[in-house]
Amino acid sequence: MADRIIEPSEILVEQDYVRTKPAQVNPWIRFLARFVDYSLFCLALLALKKFLPSIPPSSFTKLIPFEFFSWIPLETLFLFTWGKTPGKWFLKTDLRFNNKSKPEFVAALRRSMSVWWRGLGLGIPVINVLCLLVAYQRLKLTHTTSWDRDDRVHVTHRPLAPWRLTAAAIFSSCSLIVYFSIKNAG
Image (cartoon, rainbow, N blue to C red; front, side, top):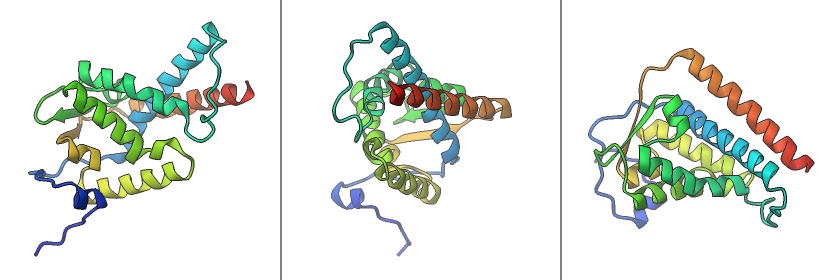
């Protein structure tokens, strides 16, 4: 019997998906692409707040950050219309959804929700770090994440110039620091 890592969701859900060949795995580029997306979105939220200052903050945003949850519909639209998000485009990460370049709307929404739930732990401090570590380990061991496996998504990385990595890291770091500094000051 072959050694196989079983995660809880595999016990609860019957899976017939087996990857035929290992994917090129680069969890750090995937992580950085996601945070480029969050950075762009947070800057857009800052601009929106500038023009609509009367938007009241929600009472639960201290526990579950509004930014991560509100990104879900936008990410779904990006995946549905273009098959990738701006961060994935900039860092040359391609997604193949069941051998198609773009997913159906429901599949894109399901993937966005799964990443928020399983990969980011709803953005709740401490839980999100644990979820990210579990997803990282799973990706390194099995060459896929649970949300990629569930929706039969094949992720590949095209060759990437070092300047793109540097620019993405600096942009993400600076814009998130600015966003949360302004958000917490206000």
